[in-house]
Structures are given as C-alpha cells and as structure tokens.
Image 1 (cartoon, helix red, strand yellow):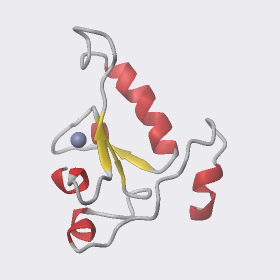
Image 2 (spheres, helix red, strand yellow):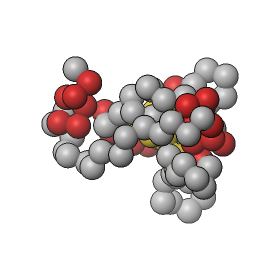
Image 3 (cartoon, helix red, strand yellow):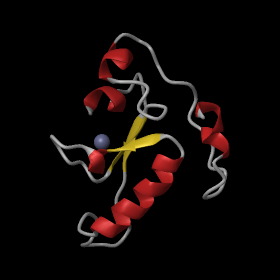
Image 4 (tube, protein in one colour):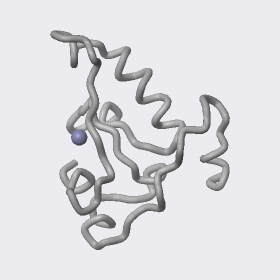
Length: 95
Ligand SMILES: [Zn+2]
C-alpha cells in the first residue's frame, strides 16, 4: 500500500523477524505480532485477499481510512500508544 507508506503520511511500516536468514519465513511470528497491532486498531497486510503482505502494518484507525482518504489529505487521528495486551483501552472509543 504505497499511499499509507508515503513520506507525507507515514502511516505504515514493514517489519521482519530479527533472525538472520529467517526474516520472512515464519508465518506464526507475523500472525502473533499482527494480532497485537490489530488489537490497537492497525490493519495487517496478511489479511488482504488480493495481495497478501505479511510484513505490512498500517494505521487506518480500525479500517476507517482508505487510500482515497489519504490521497485526499484526510488522515486518521494519532496512533495509539501501546497500553498492554488485552487492555482494550485504546479501542474503547470505537465501541
Ligand atoms: Zn508495507
């Protein structure tokens, strides 16, 4: 998703496992890391159907913002800080 990666938006990042030679081959690693991010309202490229992008995480405020929003200059609110697994604190304003 180049739009979320754009320098002007800075709403996405790609990550990998910090093990030489096995940066991208551990699907469970990506799934577990993504579960935490998703709990905070990030979207994970591993959930996409058209192009599965395991290392990709983007901040779209629980899928409320799309590429066209970003292109139009409509950016999601600030990313939440990590409040501890299962706290649900940062998602509560959506419920
Ligand atoms: Zn990416």
